[in-house]
Image (cartoon, rainbow, N blue to C red):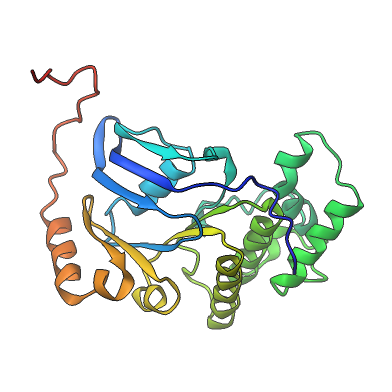
Length: 260
């Protein structure tokens, strides 16, 4: 399926001494690095390592406690974000067609009506994820794998240069995983940036050239084979186990003592 790549070409995303958290308590500390345009990056680490927190910040849903995220030629609105499947409210009374159409909201506006081109785009997206003919199905009737396919179809309709995926392969079948990995490979061939939080290290090794291994602090950010070596994974586990949940609140910039 072709794509218009309607979003303006974006430059790198730079994380500058980035600290993230909730209620001023840090979840990710002092993260430094650059995500190149067209990168396919896995974010891995133990439970509670700050992976989803980082993705929410990249999506513009969470303001940093310290440091900053720099974007050249784009903003947080120029990303397509897929939350974890359990976070999607599937009880909402909406069918697949209308759910997919929500991906075009930025182009059409809140009250805009889809024209023939948008309807064709949505139909092509459903076909691309193997869900053609399911347009009238209420989303509450879909299986976990079917729902994940629909969510990926909505990402296709959004047509953004940067795609954020939070645990996209959790609790879905092998056939769906293979199809969605193929779609990620297609996005990579188009030069899109794909950043995915993954628990499945074998999938990271299989499909993601680079990995950020996170345990509230960066353990490694490099080629996946090196990042996910036994030594680094051991360090990540040890740091996660040693984390102090009663750690002091982070200082805001204005609270920090001045150094002369």
